[in-house]
Length: 388
Image (cartoon, rainbow, N blue to C red; front, side):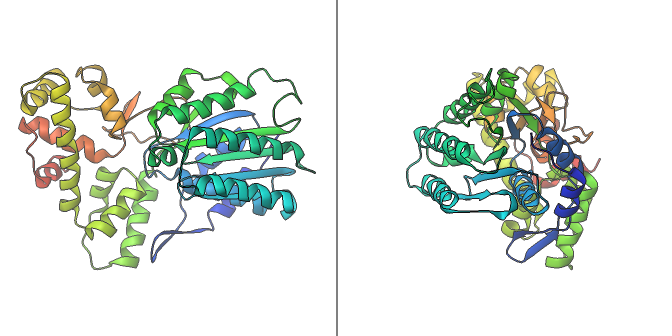
């Protein structure tokens, strides 16, 4: 089994500097809990599906985890890391050993992820190639395989969500009830991690949890204190003269670094304009939801929500407002909380027991709309509600 020293991994990762974009470089922060939980989980075989809000840092953490294990060592463990969104791959062998077969494997992975066409058959074929190479690894008893951002690669190629589900189900099926030495990867101890943002893949992992060690694990955004530190560090490095209220950014972004970088790079720290884009997104969803529910207009939709729940807390929106939850999940407004939490979720209005808003801004926009009785709200009205 794979054994690592979580404390050593944390020490190494916390020394790293992260390039967020261009000249925006920050110190890595927090994630002690997540790294400890994930490091301990490596000793348990099977398939894990790591999911979380878009921009929560899944790729960053998995990439740093793989690199840290290469540096500090994880015994006789080989690591195969495939990042589908960046279309990159690496094979890390214990002791830094390499050879023609390793280079051949990297080339095969690269050809698949760099190809102009994308199909489930390609990925299934790649998985089987991985197993063949794993069987032939010499001096290796343990193998960690990481499929990172798999769903976004599929979706970018126009392939339905079913493809991600098929791959996860296939892996779980190969692990289920296998005697040592009878699996496609031979007598090696194998751990598979698949990171996704698509909720339907998470639902599949939850539905078939336990099969082949299949379990979804939730990685959340940065906690409040770490996020506020990042805001102040980035501001001091990029625009020390800009006037921002870090607490307002916490209530809008909830620790999501990608949203923070969008504000900086695309909106030049202009919260009003950024929030206007969020309002537009919720308006579009409201138009569609009103049509789905056969309501005369969006005002009727807002009044329906107001009469049933008043406050649009995430669990109430799904359970008590009688709104179809799937569109809100597919549009990355809400996320379902299932499986094992790697992160400690914040105790805020926008986080419930079973659901949470991926960005708190969605909660505040919807709340402002309910108070006004319609979807035509201004960013200033949302900020006024947030400040109460």
